[in-house]
Image 1: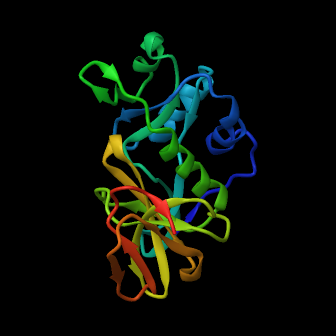
Image 2: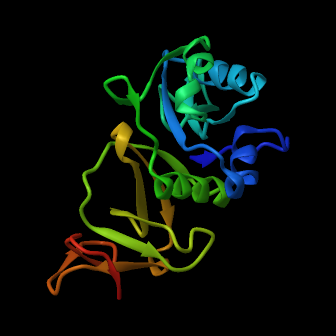
Image 3: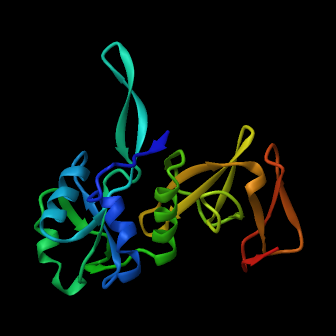
Length: 210
């Protein structure tokens, strides 16, 4: 599966990356109706808001054959930047169910997590939705287009799969990298070996790169 990279400079992903250094407001997650992600994102963009809908290509059965179709990396959610004290235009947008938060208070997405998603979009590498994982073993990607990315390590055949999580949503996405690009983040003296990856990781209590 691969991330979609459009030729248009006006795509949500392109806007997200182009304006990343001049953010005025935090990123928030909007819970939207099923299959309304693209419609809601488009309307928000027309209203002048910066939205971000990361998608990937997945194989789906179409009649008597398989074809590639675009699917959201975070089904049921659209990311958007806005002033939380002026969120009425956001809430009134078709498809929006609510702003993710605690009670009636919106809670912004962690900047490092949003940066990680942006890094994956920039790389154009294979990615897919992934079941939520609690913070555990973490690794650092040292080489390749994802260099500098931190995430959870999952063994997949001859490659390593890095899982990046949006904690607030309890959602994750996964991207595959070469085994030799990954090194563990050192946290405790005793390492844990992950069979089949050639990598060793330690319990994540305090991050410190080896």
